[in-house]
Image (cartoon, rainbow, N blue to C red):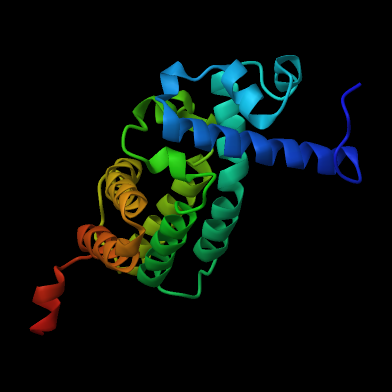
Length: 209
């Protein structure tokens, strides 16, 4: 029986998941995703390979599980912001963008936003099983609120609009990943681009009224 770390089985599992996230992060700094094996991850995390298979059946399942765990705080934060229905949709959208970009700096999520992360991102399932799907759903709700309140223009396809704008947010997260010192400026630019796409009028036009 493997040695149990921590005061309980639950604490032991939490410590192992933390080790697995750090092992994958370190390996991604050294080699490309496709060349990383479960054996590499187990060795870096200090686990027997058979033990690792108790946590995930393969590398894709491990990446999904790690991403879900890492995304939980961001999902909760975005949901809390979206639920502030007494506040303007514009302010909620601005705060959601900030919350997500701050979350992208977390070490456990950083690999998803590094240059060359395409294969890693592709390993995360699309649709309802995607760990970020809950965030997308909350953003869509805020956009619909903004349309209903007259803050945002009436877009024909809310899911498509959010999908396209998520590319802007991801580009911002990737830039911050390359150069953390650009966080404030990049966050402001992302907020401006997203809101300009949703608002009725460009900022300059409103300033002349």
